[in-house]
Length: 262
Image (cartoon, rainbow, N blue to C red; front, side, top):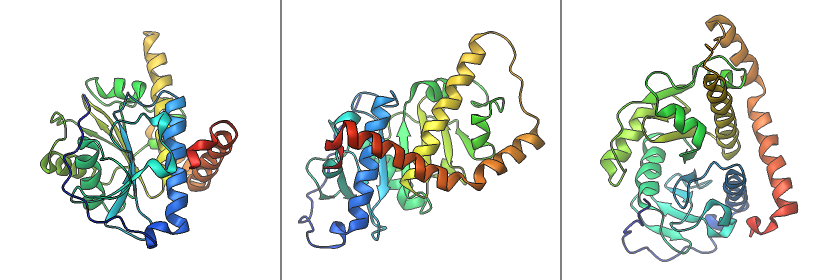
């Protein structure tokens, strides 16, 4: 299912530049932690699916996982730095083709999307396979996403060219979470921590909704006014909560899988 990107010849790897800055090193560690914990939680799919983040200080470059490596194998140094033309600026290997054509176009066309996490995680993807709105505002965790989601109804097959990447980027609009019908989900955010936090709670919200739907009994949605008020309450401390969430997973991984930092 995965395809290696036939990237053009890369320019010389940059050394002793802003790519060696502390902020970039920290971004590598944070992103690697997300890959490792996503693998632990079953949010990955084989060697497919991809997380990316715009390189701090370089809006023309982004970090992304290399083709052929599972999420559980990702380390900070294994991540690639790519430009928007398919060149690998730093790192060994190439990105998976759909990773490049989706993420490069999202970062290029949606500058607010510093982080872009795309998965086929099972529960959220299951909801993306159904007719109608995927999330029902019936659970508290779901209300974190009230007014922040969008549904991309126009599945276009594998994203193996810039045209499909541009279509996916355009479909995001002002949303942070996109249910890609017949495909999976895309989460975008201003930081790695925010994207991770949304990805995690999105799958949890989808899981409990699926379990409730499996009973065959009707769901009880929260009234719109209360849903909006609860969402606003959640958003007040969301950024700090996301930061602490990411710090917690890094502590766990530092104890149990310290190689992720290397």
